[in-house]
Length: 454
Image (tube, rainbow, N blue to C red; front, side, top):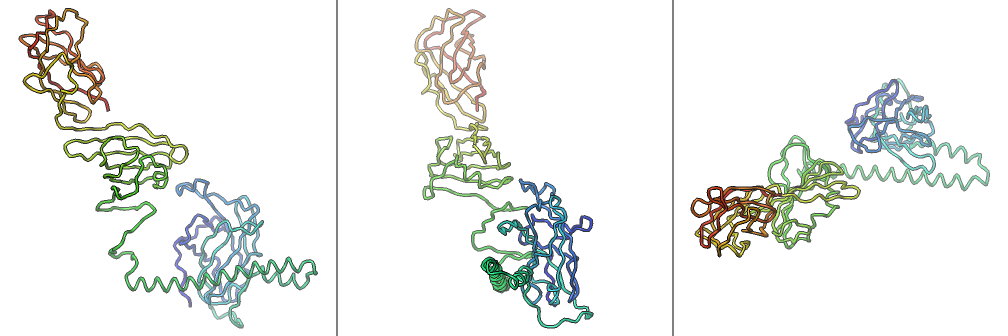
């Protein structure tokens, strides 16, 4: 007896109807005990409830009846001896909108003892004979020694048999039409036969590969000596590094390449490192960045960009919406930034000069640290309480507006260090509550931590 086809999907019933799930993959097989019968059986009736899924094909959504209006079902396959069988004329659509079908199986299906080598229900459009879907099924022919059969299993196509009967009674005008249908059926037989031979060869090849340990095996350690590419998300745990690398020998990349985002499956993350690639739409001037892309849904993703600069660097983020239709690229926002101490002298106003300690700044995340001291290059009368004196302008960062720090000048004087945009000003230079002149050569110290914009 031929070994029973391995059934990976159990049969679920809806009353007397077995649910035929058209969303299964080509590797899945449903075992139909209702179709299994004894050698020589005839007239066995199978009841099917054909199900599909909504247009989004989300596996979490429930199955719904497939509308069978204008459609029909046939059973095709190869029995235990590899002989082709096709049954299509014995199908009755019980309720088209509910997807309910019944099929009467002829004696020709039960001519060889053993499990069918392969079989499937084909759902097709009657107009044009276009296949809509197919579901692999398994069943078996038993030898209970109660039935006596003569001869070998023979190829059987009920449509072919029906055409022969019609041909015997056909008029001259019908001959060409019937011959055309014979040709179509013969083509189906040739395709099916070739498929069986190809399948046998494929099984032989895979058996050799398994014996040679040239394929991955379940419940065994597998060592891959070449690149392994997975086009679907990996479920489970991984170790090691998963990253793509692009340098000056790689094709120039573009951070706004929507094709790359669309090809990334939802619910996955990719990491790409660019070094000397002249990356397009890079939000920073440095040419060595690591970009993490998190594809949340078919429509939305967010990206994090890291500048790997040693003593200085950036971390920026943005959101990308409407990926599958009309992409909207959000503005890159600085999440954090860090720099070494840098001179503020290039931004110093000409009415001030460097004192004993050079004024410097250091960025750390969303804050900037300031230190140093200045001396006025000339005496400033300072008689107007509303007057402000620019100390630094066009700084390489933006202050969060209206921050004030009290600072110390020469003697007992104090002043307010005021920030706005890219500017730092001196206001209300005074002693004992009274405005005083800002004397040339005097000491003006400054220090503090200020918030800056992302």
